[in-house]
Length: 272
Image 1 (spheres, rainbow, N blue to C red):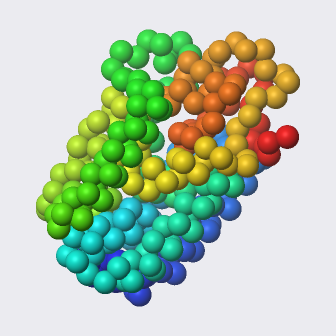
Image 2: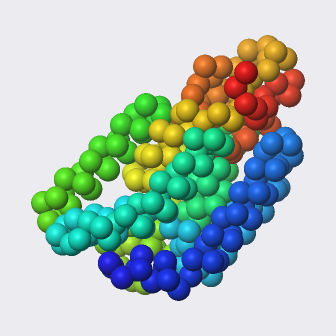
Image 3: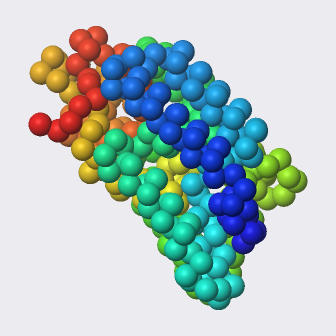
């Protein structure tokens, strides 16, 4: 598994980087112009799943640098070898400081797959949302704590010489090789019918850093003076991040809040 990142870095960086740039430009443009319709979102999700999931086998796999680093630590390898993957991790995470979690929202194949499944039990309609009995809502504070605890477990077990993350990483399930990673991906898929983005919100190590950065993002969804505090956006937001004072730490740009707002009072803007 230590060779997986090296293979990624030497054999296929161009498709990964090119796809991320294309997805970023398209998704950012649609979000910034308030043109991200439900059909366009679904098309972006399907494109990501097919291209980076099926064709590239789970690339861009932003969890891979963490996986690689924990493997190096557990095997008592040279920590200098982790600088390259961690630099890539920090670079992509850094985007969240400016624009929020656009990468998580649209470029990650597992995130896109979970988002598509969530449309079944987490609809962007207040009446339909309230009728759904098979979804479980968990506060962002709780999911964030669990995610950081899981990251801590990864680091502690690595220091103890135990490496298990590479065996269960569901992102590697897109390689469709029989094993724990594929099994983990199927579990995530099953949970996605009841929990909104269970991997992203509860366990993803990249999500821990990206969520922290997006909390301080300079550009994010904000309410305008047209808001009447009707509360519809807060009802349909699956991460409970639609509140007026929310930091949008767990905003994946699902746009449910925009779809139900009767006054077009939510815009993607710089903080004034």
